[in-house]
Length: 355
Ligand code: ZN
Image (cartoon, rainbow, N blue to C red; front, side):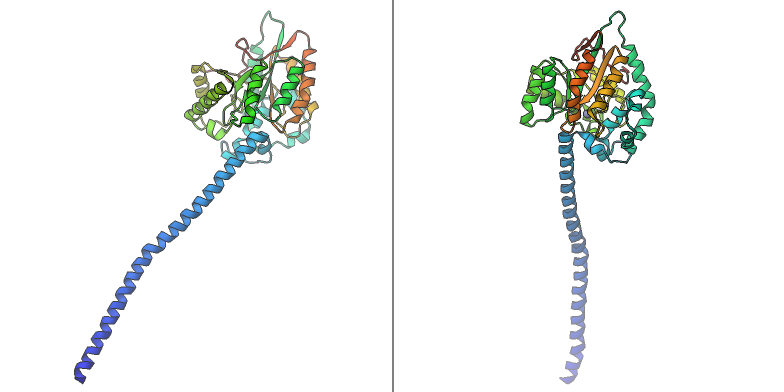
């Protein structure tokens, strides 16, 4: 019996060890499967949280663009990478600044110029040649035998909290202008869109989203945005707009799509696009009312047809303040009329239709 007991004990121990090892192996296998799954779950949850925050940040950015104009966001951005979501908002200002005739730029105080971001400076270098084209095109618009100078006052980026004041000033002087608007579905703007039309001003399009990263990413993106705005404006005002101003102008250097593709598409849709030959500089932060007036009045006498670029945005009180003086000084010029853009307007186009 004793002998049998001694023989059985090692075999019991061995069976225990085998069971233990088996459990250990199974636990290791289970661990090897479960731990990576847990890590994946944790990472997925974190990714989701970060994505949500990013979306919120994008929405806020978009809201600020709508509320304060993209210029406020463009300041202080020193990165010159084109068409990065955070950077492209400043491109219109950069392009706008660059389209100014040289005399106008020279009249801007050095401090203001120093405020320009690196991106603007980089774009400025790229667009020096384009500026010359603008002047040539504008000269080409001279109408022989018609000595009446036509001045077109245009406002980009509206409607905004300033549109009402702008419309009041225009009413006061009985002057008609052109508004290149964006899509703002907020119902508080419904009557503003209507008032622009009912007052006899021209309603033009300036993209629904005004987001360079969407507009200029692909032809399809541009088409979608264009039709969204055209339909929105028709439903809001009854006007089927056939006039367009590219955010950043047709000579912008941020578009990933060749601008000639977009220009040809507009032509197919019977939409005319208008750039400008007189930049007021009102997109620059801190510009004074007087400098806006000076910039405009330096540019207007150079052309038989002047298309003045102004902005309708909540942070642009200086533009509103400058408007009466601009109107008075333009009206004081000989043989000069201020008129809204119509089918008779010879468009100023920074780059010509290549179709
Ligand atoms: Zn704009």
